[in-house]
Length: 178
Image (cartoon, rainbow, N blue to C red; front, side, top):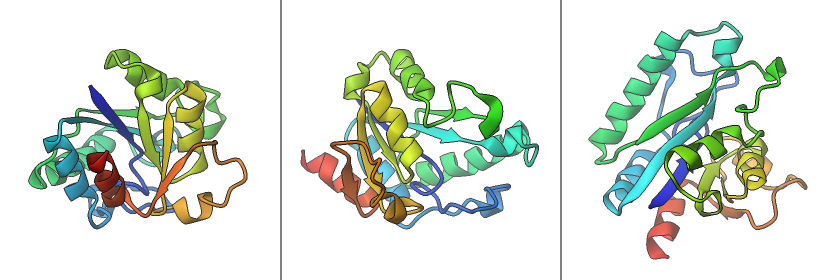
């Protein structure tokens, strides 16, 4: 199985400093939906792993998160793609959970549930915590320059071996060329 884990905000859709609080605020990054479509058609299993502390902070509830994700699913399907699962951490940063990135809990859970060796897991993120989560789990980190990625690229804590691309469309092109 070819499994690709995607962060949501900053990779698939534009990020907001005040959180994505409604479906209207969820706006796809140009080319991201088409990239997911191409990867789906090429046999990749696509899983989203996202921190959603807006729930733990009381900014939105699970119902609203489900509405946002329903919009994302529809947009991906309209582009000919499919997201196989969405994993999210609802906890606030001070909750000390093991699922909030940069902790590896979500990545390990995804690998276990999809019966994939964690070493074979690829994760695309735009922030250091995304890359640290997959690297500490033993998987492979991919940075995109969208979202916070342009700032993250110069971080001295960037995990060794991180591959860097302009956006998800460029990641797609590279994976399909491999």
